[in-house]
Amino acid sequence: MIKIGIVDDELLARKVLEEYCSKINNFELVISTGNPLEFVNFMQQHKVDLIFLDIEMPELNGMEVLRSMLNPPKVILTTAYSEYALESYNYGVIDYLLKPIKIERFLKAINKVSTTIVTQPNASNESKELQIKYDGMPVNIPFSSILYIQSFGNYLKIFTDSRMYLISETLINITTLLSENFQRTHKSYISNLERVTKATRTYLLIENNKVPVSAMYKVIVLKKLEVFAKS
Image 1: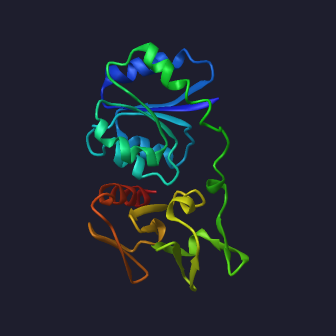
Image 2: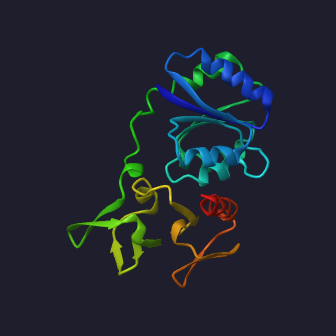
């Protein structure tokens, strides 16, 4: 079964998508909400394979929802805002559906789904360690010991409690190996939110290190820290 999420603040649009999804045999609707923050919180504990996502929503827009997730599921955008097209390709966007959504157009979009979705558990959520190669040797780093990760040209600096590792890797690739405790805070940084001792709108304090928070990520970073504080 392909697990489906619908995130749209327009009730009528949600109901239409719910009806369409109910007609697809291998679709299982696991969440339908008009509150993007509710969906972000839901994703902390649950797996979703495909989301129908609106862009213009209160509190968090659709692109901010996608930026909040290290491993976003496949996405079909339900919007008329094509200016987000280029950025959206970084987040697994399969198609755009223009409202009001017709059943024929919906079926055309989901025909692309079966060739792009592999429904298997996310290994990063099951592991408690980051597995890397350092100086040609395999190294396992407990997630809890990682403070933050910084992009450094064609390399990454992984800062831990005990040392720094310099490896040849990209931020995009390493995000698929991390747990949900980690969040992109800047184009060059990923932070372990469990290790944050102070948060401002421009930086996070992690073990006396100021990790920058850019304007693109500040809303979702602060919202996710609120969730961590309540848990």
